[in-house]
Length: 168
Image 1 (spheres, rainbow, N blue to C red):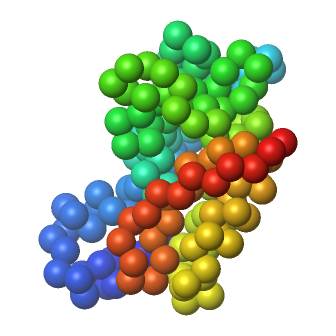
Image 2: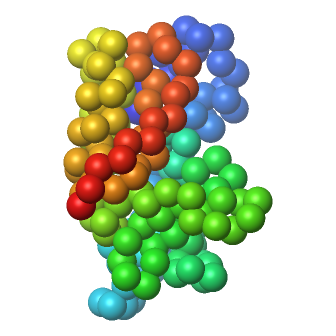
């Protein structure tokens, strides 16, 4: 998480600094909730922690998972729903027409693994500068293949979305 001093150096106001820092925090729910064992790891995460302030790239987690016509919604990628399907696969559904637009990961843990790799890349931007395709492929590999939406901001490049097609 960027320090207050670092964020102040960008000219941010105190309320803006608080908002940026809050996007790095998942707060444990009190009292601890009883979590069903038959739900996905993403659902367990959202049940145990308030992740509504957490953003990873363009992925913004919900405060609570909610029913979706194709499974359980756990997050948004911009306006599109990130859904854990009954099969366990994580997919993105278009906000406009409700159709499945991408397969994000084979299952919840692999989705979280891909996000972890993405965060590690963001924390080491100089190493990944000019290697966007390789970075997207690594995230896709961590997700278990398929077509994964990987949002990367490498060095000074603008936000890019890569769709990488790999077979399972």
